[in-house]
Image (cartoon, rainbow, N blue to C red; front, side, top):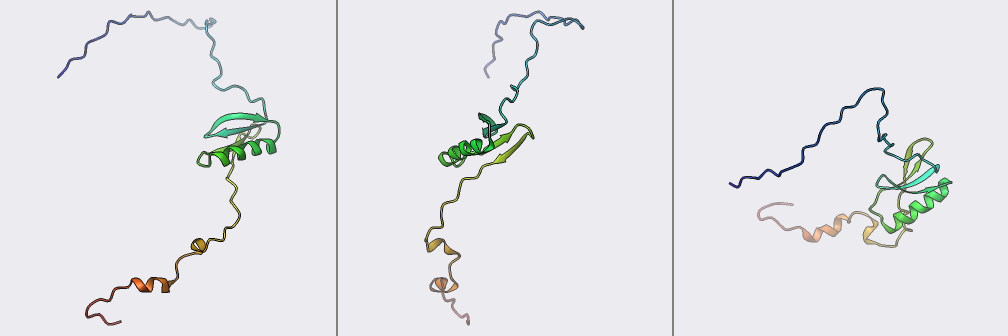
Length: 119
């Protein structure tokens, strides 16, 4: 078994914080303040800000059409709520296979007779 060598690191001195004294680096807020009333969020990350809900929804639909697997929402800053944007469904296609489950008679040809069984 190999032994790991310890790296020669530099030991840092601890700084003591004195109460009621201003520190050099003040904490910054983790999120910038919301300046627009509506945002487009992709996987809960804000991408663009808009003045109206309709403009944000149009931008979200454009992203959802291009990338249908992403979760695209419109975030309303006033109420702090996300509204999920669904991909618009295409017009009804005339596909006979997707009409419904297969008919029972269609399966009749697959039945195999069992020896000695009465039907």
